[in-house]
Length: 381
Ligand SMILES: Cc1cc2nc3c(=O)[nH]c(=O)nc-3n(C[C@H](O)[C@H](O)[C@H](O)COP(=O)(O)OP(=O)(O)OC[C@H]3O[C@@H](n4cnc5c(N)ncnc54)[C@H](O)[C@@H]3O)c2cc1C
Image (cartoon, rainbow, N blue to C red; front, side):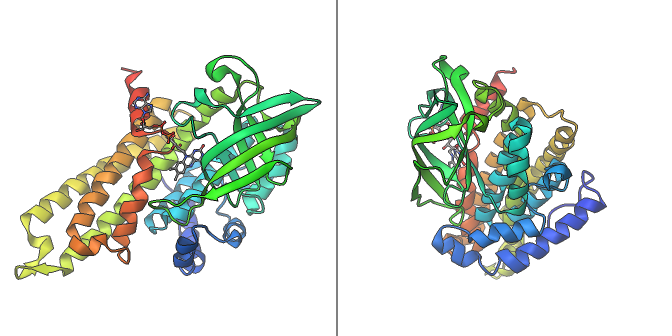
């Protein structure tokens, strides 16, 4: 069970109940099919929107609930703890990552147009930074948005883009001028119905199978100048401002999924017998599980500290990197050890621990790899 925590109040508890009911009614029955099809139904987004589970932080003026990041965190925790990593990742990118760029950098007109649709699920959003030749090092981005007439023409290629197949709106990180390194990068909104936009392959992944991850192609896509989010050339600064929230979200998802693996394992070792007793009675099992329990307890305490800081706008990039690094690495240790207690059954896809293991691996890669987190943390030493 997710631990009771002081960082949440009765309003969050009500939201938590609503998320659980939604997962039971709309996610659980469809999940096996979504996993085999490699994508959630488009209808999932509309239902999640109708249930009030998308972009809870968006102000009421733009159709949202006017919540805080803690509302996002409740939704992320519940989806991750349910063990449905694909839909959790989809929602995370749309709600916790993309909505922030539109809300904080969009013009009034863009906010009026897109935020209500993102809240309702009518529009699914993706953010496209990564390219075949530029992942950790965004300075290597080659996608260009060249000024032409009263707008820009976007050309280039992106890969590994979450929500790539369902997205109706893509926030593209593109080079708008020849300033060296990151200075020439801007955030450009590209609507999926613009001529020249094309979706590539839905990529075949190790885990999070129902979360679609895709290549995207931009072949001279003309967009109006008003589609630039924030200042032209201000893309890198905007990313640096928004990435801490993305990293905290990943940390929250990691610890909730790790808690799920731990709880499943505690149940299993009580039932599974070897040498005449439950495997949970061996000292090795008890000590290893005690270590994992200690990891989880310390992790939750730091995550809660970060949640509280983030709602006060006091979460530093350093805090977010520490949370992402530690929670995702901890999740890796937890799922690996937990799977070991399942023996051969842990290697079978019909056992949930197998999926939790596979789904966990990417947490140390996207949103900035563990190595990049260490680089960022080391800068403050
Ligand atoms: C399932 C999935 C979903 C994703 N979703 C999105 C998305 O929605 N939008 C998006 O833009 N991207 C997305 N990504 C891309 C993800 O953010 C990148 O994969 C990640 O940033 C790493 O980039 P890369 O794959 O190019 O690896 P590289 O940058 O090539 O790194 C390879 C290795 O080198 C290491 N390395 C790189 N630089 C350093 C350094 N300075 N010091 C030490 N080690 C270093 C890395 O840590 C890594 O171990 C997704 C990826 C996956 C797998």
